[in-house]
Image: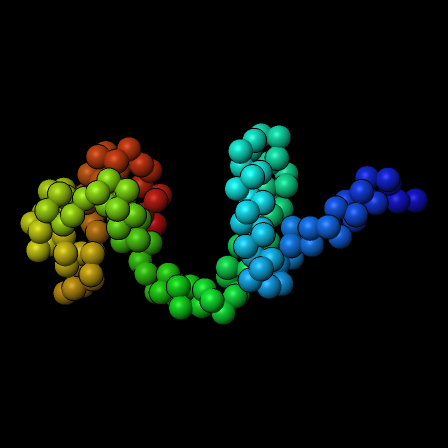
Length: 138
């Protein structure tokens, strides 16, 4: 025998089918709007947020509108992506990272020129400066 709770879930999904599976860009927009509302009371809505997040992530991973972005992200070094994000969050330019050396060296690291990469010493210094885990760069 099916629990009455299952019937309630089935009824809710009939009203909000995008909660479990996004099929159109309009569904995606509605899912994002719902997520904005749900996070206002995160603790009470955590199970729904987790279900909706999976649905949104699945759409973003496979929707044609995100294919160029996903391809660019797939080809980006995680450490460099993390560094660029930290720089953007803190309003920093290439001259603002003495931990990595000169402006030219920072630029080469960010752009992968001449095979330049973040070293262990760089990562340690960045972790100390920004208060983040080294795992962020791997």
